[in-house]
Amino acid sequence: MQLSPNFSLHEMLRSQTATRHSITEQFSPPPMVVDSLKNLCAKLLQPIRELYGGPLVVSSGYRCPRVNKLVGGKPNSQHLKGEAADLDFGTKEANKLLFEAIVEWKKRGFLEFDQLINEYDFAWIHVSYKLSGKNRNQILVVS
Ligand SMILES: [Zn+2]
Image (cartoon, rainbow, N blue to C red; front, side, top):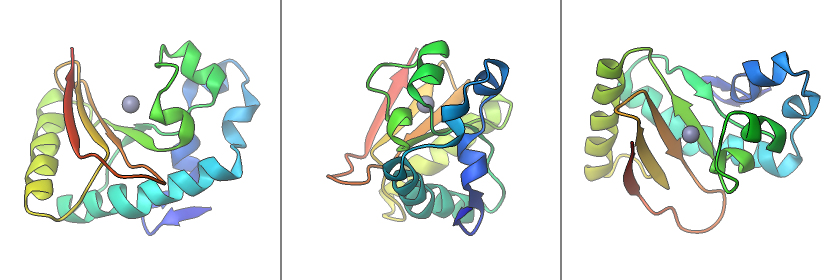
């Protein structure tokens, strides 16, 4: 299933942890999660991709509760709701450039997000977009 022109449901559910531990519920999320993922892709990931001008690499999208626990995610993580994605180009330098670009695009009013997080000195970038309620445009650092 395609969630936006360049993002598929498959890509947002992919998880090596789930595959390794045969956690099948990771791959059949509740309808509400699919709605949230669709919203995240349409309102945030697709605009980022178009402004960036190339493919993004989603290293983690939705996480079912068991997967979230195994990867050490917070119990209230937005990944559990399908409202968050981690982006990782494979180098801190590339991740930092994208992070700074997202901050700039926000300033210019090209996009909105709930949270944009620099995780562990740009090891990856976490972005989220809420299905309901106000998106807060918070920029945070986790170290
Ligand atoms: Zn994350």
